[in-house]
Length: 303
Image (cartoon, rainbow, N blue to C red; front, side, top):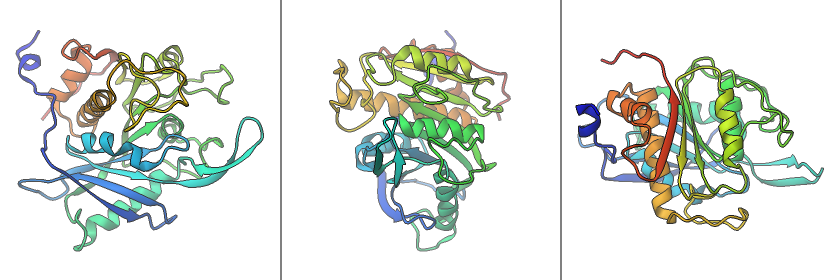
């Protein structure tokens, strides 16, 4: 094991994270924005991480996860996006469902926040770097958004991937087209790093389907991170009986581990952080007893 693996500290970088609520101008969605308190701020320091919620899961359920990711040096935006869609059984449902177009809408709002002297984010947001986070249905939307496809399951409009979108890491997702069809298409990520985090006890997005999705990601770097004893809702503040399996890892512990690996993956992908990169791709989870990791990577040059 290299000296760098021995000395790298995977814990949160910032001790304090604040949160405030905004309305997304394009659609009126309310969103919670989490950002670290910076001891010495410099312009354009914090990349954006957009969290795309799971179906019917309120944004408040992701507060612990979002706070953890923000502590690694990101502005984490968690919107509630309500819309109407038709379910598998033909039933029309109105509720909280992520949409690919949120990627562009939230990015545009963050550019306004960064330029507003009255905003807590004034001049500290790097609006040229956007990473995606996502859970379940929202993670499916994130995978579609990275591929620059208008998937009717998760897109109501004419989505075009912005050049600022540079990475995504998602929890509890598999990518079948159509959903539940058993058909796993190739994921044309066009060089954009993708990480998949999966609970070994997930009773909704079972691990084998997540692993198949990982295998279908065309371009590396990519990573598949298994959380031992986690179920589908281990990313949320509370467990849910919508998953028939109960987790064996304590909820707060699981959320913290998922947030840690999400933050490190984004640091490796968006901030060219050598230590984070080595931890994610080269330790194979050896330093974290709660996880196991498989990955493929490319040779990168670090500043």
